[in-house]
Length: 314
View 1 (cartoon, rainbow, N blue to C red):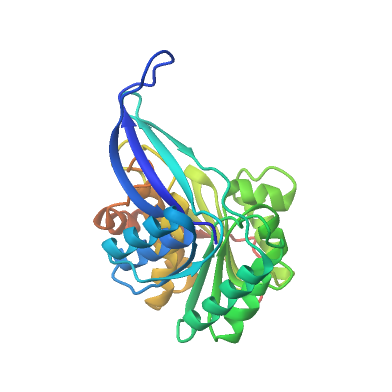
View 2 (tube, one colour):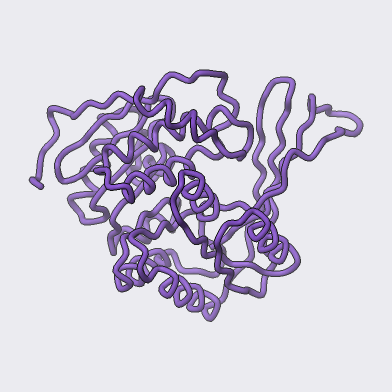
């Protein structure tokens, strides 16, 4: 709903005085849903990105997606699509991701987005709703998305934050992914380890907010919870130096959905997601992970069913 054109620049060291000379590493279409679609295709799947586009930057966004070969459907809006800056400091090998607020949408534009999404979802087993909501939309907008996706016969995978996340819980989704920050906002307390994640996931399942709940725990890994129980997934050892976690969440969701489409159960699909998130940590800024590295890390993801977990049956 609020995509970007991502500009990635590289400097040697940031200097406080004088000019910082930079080289352009990349210019690419960005935003949660677009990134997920791109990565699903890189895994060999098929995906269509549905996104808003407005103004000159919106035209550039469409052109970049066309040049990249990402299948997409643009919904024209009156406001200007935003640009985001990723600055990679090569000396200390640090990344800074600077994202301005996106354009505001009105009620008519919101309805058009839902109509276009519903048509695009027909015949697709999964729809991923990813990223923040632009201004002007109600907090329960993703609840409306869930209803449209359900009506189209698809399953919704949701990856969002803040009021948009809370607003979607009343309707319920097939799969909900939360990172540690998002989990803490729902739990209203720190989420540090698997015990904390289990308490939150159990609540999400028991209230009908999600059929599958995945809470990621940074370098520790993730907890995948279904009606069969709670499974710990431990992040694999990295074969190199971590450079940035900017694209890890979108990469994980893409791999997870790829696994589900291939017929894996949620835990197996989540294991591929954890491995892919680790691979994404090896690339600076939001640059794409190495698919071969992600697949090589998959066997290194250890899993453990929590013995104290309450099983609800199949």
